[in-house]
Amino acid sequence: MVVVSACGRRGSAGPASSASSVSVSASLSQDELYAEAERVYRAYFELEQRAFLEGGVNGVPVEMNQYIMAGYASGESSMLTQMAERRVRMQEGTRSQYTVLEQVPDDPPSDSLVSLSVCIDSTASPLVDADGNFVASGYDLSRVFFKYDVDGKLKIYSSNEGTTDSCEEN
Image 1 (cartoon, rainbow, N blue to C red):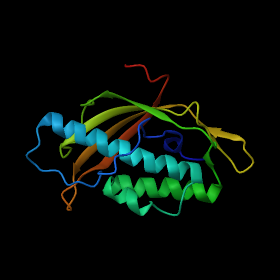
Image 2: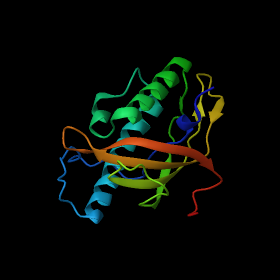
Image 3: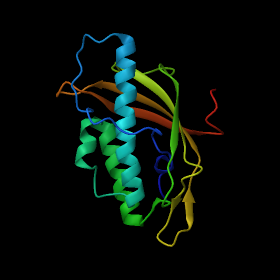
Image 4: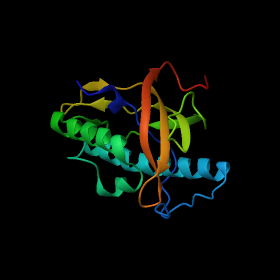
């Protein structure tokens, strides 16, 4: 069985920005930080969607490292490796969607510079096995935490994930 977080597509309906590797300054306003966090999340999601369609990869795609770090990168690597080993992929021709529910979820870690609460809807983009049999889909609620990496870029470093009944604002 694939880990539950594999059915959540941390993502967006919009395309990733080509200028997505811009370093951000510690002098950004709170609104600018949230905008940057959403941009980072959106770009990361596009790469994850590709990996899910391919059926996972061995580790994290190199370009994903500009958006994720620390424990989050390790978890992503494990999930994608597990998908590849089990020959599980996102159903061809489908795509998950996400909604940012709020900018500051309850109880962010003290080292989080900015936080987003995101709901991922994978009901129209299920995970399937090599024979096309349903594996998982649903609604996942993620609280995603960001901070600066040593390269000066705002990145996802941690999250708390769970399931929910819909992506309507709670």
